[in-house]
Image (tube, rainbow, N blue to C red; front, side):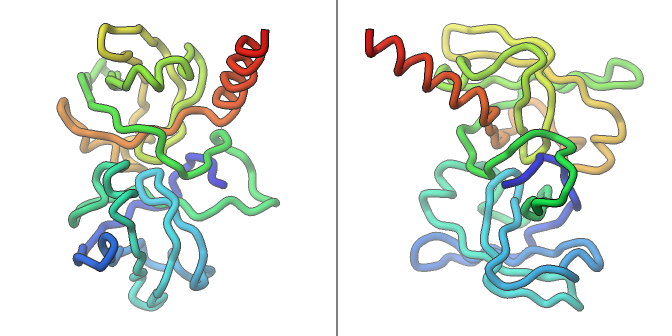
Length: 205
């Protein structure tokens, strides 16, 4: 489990073809791997991955990502910046919201506007995800826990709006977003269970 509070910005420095997907080598911030062990979970842009090898002194770690995971995510198939978050400890503060690290879908940035002091991010999501989104509800974008300020259904899915403060842009990769960029989305875990309970109750009638 994770919280959607990014603990560091890293960079995929190598992406090699492997038998069932790719092997990635990630450069983490200095000192980031001091408490990491082989087999630990680290989320990259919101996708939970397993550390298979690491060099704490060089702040490098390796992971394998399957072809299926590559098909279901964005931004994890080539060198580039990534948001990092280590798995939640039982004693940690839950600063964001409960995040599983399992990407539910890929969204597309429609707008990213500077409103003077803060920014508005508008993302298009699929119809399948629309029913899980609500004003003041939570959504994870590239691993960052954010609050939905507006949501509107469209003919081909939905569009939702998020306000971003400068601090969030400085501490994550979200500042590099632009219209047309694809982003990893994970809906709120509680919303997913509520939707399942309601749909199961309706079908039982």
